[in-house]
Length: 251
Image (cartoon, rainbow, N blue to C red; front, top):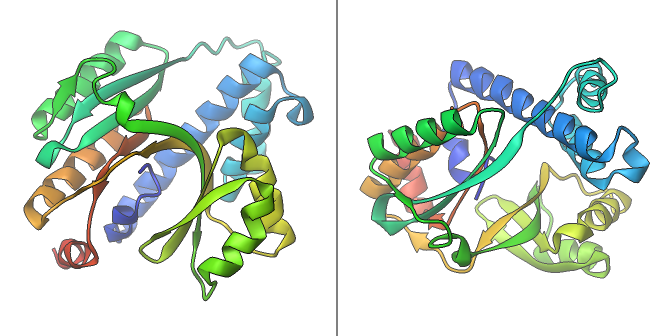
């Protein structure tokens, strides 16, 4: 999936975690700026901004940073924010499909960096449309199991528009239409169920289960792409069994 993918749990060194956190903050701030620029600074009248702010708060972005991003994006600080959203398509190890979503103020730089990283890490760029057809845009809410049953979770979110609940290792994923995300979040809050991440993302129609060697290569490619400042989200149909995950953690 994206930044909350289950293989991200293999990252355990403090320096790596701190570095990821800083980059995550920067990307969340950029999302807020763009949403404020497009729809204005009022959260009540700007669903995209409300979603971006909620996600940032869930990731512990300081309120001062959030407020400043809203003001900067909406032009209240006199700064121009001009980002473009660009989607690149590619193939990774073992024929996995990859969508790379960039938010950038320099399209040429983003394209060059993405191509370089994909090529250096065993992947190939793909023509527009050759990979995207394998994915559907959905609302995705991730949360840890924490003793919660699948049936209990489904009962809490079904009337809010949830289409299905998926088991993803030690987590659940609630899948819905993107416009139903606010209702899903409200239903979880009312039920007292804590969630970790919510986003409008891309869900693959089929998955490719990776063996250990290809999983190692995929994680290297994923991490290298995630390190790029312009890359906001990475979506893939790569999947890893519990056994493969365990071997990755040992390494």
